[in-house]
Length: 129
Image (cartoon, rainbow, N blue to C red; front, side, top):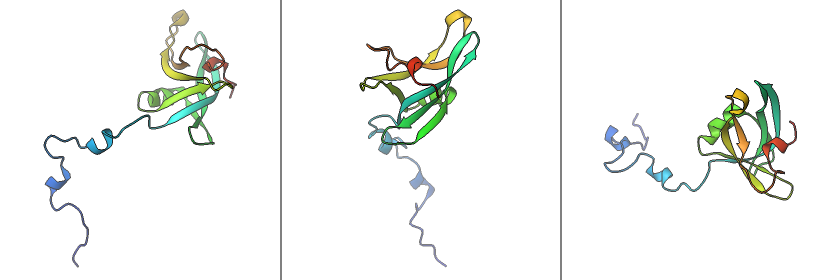
């Protein structure tokens, strides 16, 4: 029985052509983060020698379901193309960034909101989850 698979005719058809990137069709049209999440609440825990956020609940932009993320996962996602932010009742957003706490000999890798004109959208002021 003859195959009707319309695939490549040779292995060389699968390889990128000289001077091109194998992802050139996707990277050239990139225009923003893969996903953007609004943090709606946090869970904290005492870690030596003080409290730190250990997980967050967030809603993806355009979505309605809450998702729970451990801080380690949020940091990993922030290292990629995803973004996290907080928002106060007035609509003021604050970007969330990776942070390494150095207070009182602490060395915890965590997250925090970027400083802006209001404290109402700070991660520390989010409701407990």
